[in-house]
Image 1 (cartoon, each protein chain N blue to C red):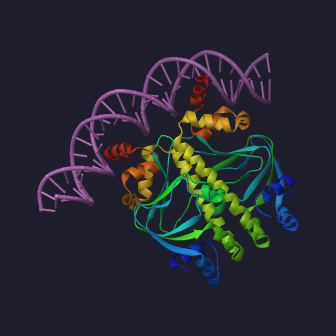
Image 2: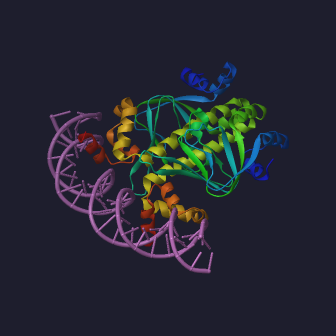
Image 3: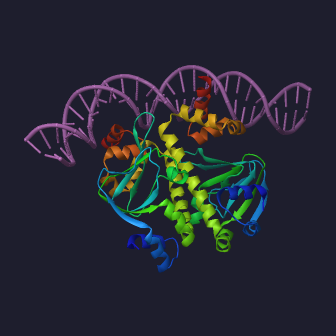
Amino acid sequence: MNRELELYIRRYITISEEELSVFSQYLILKTIKKKEFLLKEGTTCKARYFILEGCFRHFYIDVKGNEQIIHFGIENWWITDYASLVYQVPSKMYIQALEHTTFLELNEEDLEKLYLKVPKLERFFRIIMEKTYIAAQQRIEYMFSLTGKEFYEKFVGSNPVFAQRVPQYMLASYLGLTPEFISKIKSRS
Amino acid sequence: MNRELELYIRRYITISEEELSVFSQYLILKTIKKKEFLLKEGTTCKARYFILEGCFRHFYIDVKGNEQIIHFGIENWWITDYASLVYQVPSKMYIQALEHTTFLELNEEDLEKLYLKVPKLERFFRIIMEKTYIAAQQRIEYMFSLTGKEFYEKFVGSNPVFAQRVPQYMLASYLGLTPEFISKIKSRS
DNA sequence: CGAAAATTTGACATGACTCAACTGGAGTGG
DNA sequence: CCACTCCAGTTGAGTCATGTCAAATTTTCG
């Protein structure tokens, strides 16, 4: 079992070496180059990915043709398109590497088998989903309560390192603002 | 076991009568009157609630002092403040009945015990959380891609019955718009 | 029936967008 | 290693969607 993932799992559940090693049999270590895609619109998503090193952006093309980033994925995060994965329908999303990235792939059909062998993983993924949902909820609250300027400043304030790692226009997209507007925010302060 | 909840559970997992009856021992049938609260700011949320009949709104008071509705809860939905429930911290949220409402209460400490007795419930709640998360994600996409007018029309179009059930100013709050603006949307079409 | 709450309407304000032009680095090829 | 291109970022002018505030009207409900 990969050391990073082991630590991550043990933050949430207690699990034996044996169970971990069964889990690890289903994980495929992969790498992907900068700008390559893990998922493209029209493809049905078949797996979840645990990021070991690197960074993804998760976006879609909206009705007006703009790339709208809904997430970034970094080290120690799971990334996937749940809407496509869970309902097994073609995705409207793209997941693209922003850097050379290493990750573990967990196929969803395999995961279903795994749940039978290691039922504790149901618990693990339940807990992960709860936290993921709470984060999404938090995001909705910020979108409602903060102005663009406040949202930008909050994001950069709480993720200073990450804000360096991605270009400004992607931050703008993530925050639902235009690059021009971000530029004006910065100059006015 | 309550019939509604049984049907709901069996949409997602296969489960025996015995397991269901263990589950049902932990459920408390309750009712609440219109305008009463299930949860108030400052209280730590201790349970999840399955709505049998009636309706709740889930809101918080933002920095500017406005009530910001983040969800409505209706029949066959679970409602709770996950942020408070999962981390056991005081809630920033209110959950208030909009009608006389009947629901089943599931205490979180009990649920932890239940997971040991009926591990399948981990699976059940994992699946529920996945769907709940997907819905939250969808909401974020709408907030990004649609104008206020479009969002309002989409909501009323897909929930015509529900839109009747709550006052306009609450819809406005849920959509992140002002009641005045909703009024203008309606008059201009 | 009357008071309180919800909705509507209008005048005005503003946050954020659009578009277009400009600047400055980062690669790339000769 | 220079010249060129290209992309990200900046700046400014003008616009538009939506908000604010206040008053008028309608609905709800005790």
